[in-house]
Length: 112
Length: 115
Image 1 (cartoon, rainbow over the protein chains, first blue to last red):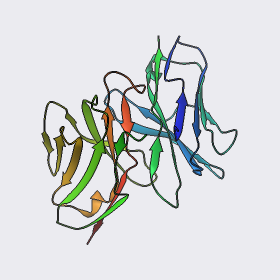
Image 2: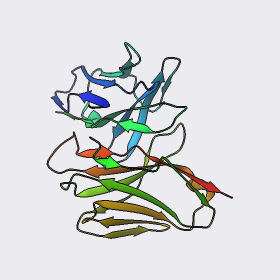
Image 3: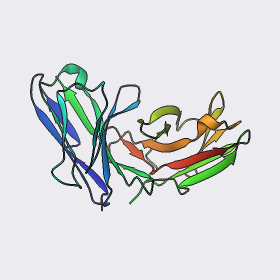
């Protein structure tokens, strides 16, 4: 039983395209996140979201947008993809009053 | 099935003493291990890593030890400082896949440094 699942695992696309990465958690957590991992393995938070508030890292271009159809899903939409968007994107979830984070296995996005 | 386990959700250590955070893994194909540190409301930041060909890597106050036969690694922080209070994530890399970049994370250990 995968607690936090992301699809697809690999995504290769051309510059200028629009793409989405899906994330689902079955843990009943109230907060979900998107992280971007750069070439140096550094994880940077992009968004955190619960049913009350969306917190956006101000360094994230507005071409990136999270969409949450319900508490168990937080999808990442990316418009007009650029070469620099190539990275690994991790979804995560947590229950703020209980601590502990669960990460998905990541999505490797390659923009060509 | 959790391939990277951090069995201590929290750890409390006195300032100046040694903090030891533990991590166990089950996948023998993992060949690279990383520790991340996370403050509240911030993203995790890379701390230190170790390749499976080594058994120790040191960077200032931080040392990571790897015991491949036991599938166990640990992070030592000495001396512990108040600014070390954070959540620490263990992560492992699988060169043969099993994830977009082979990174599998543990659930984290909340380290609390007491004055």
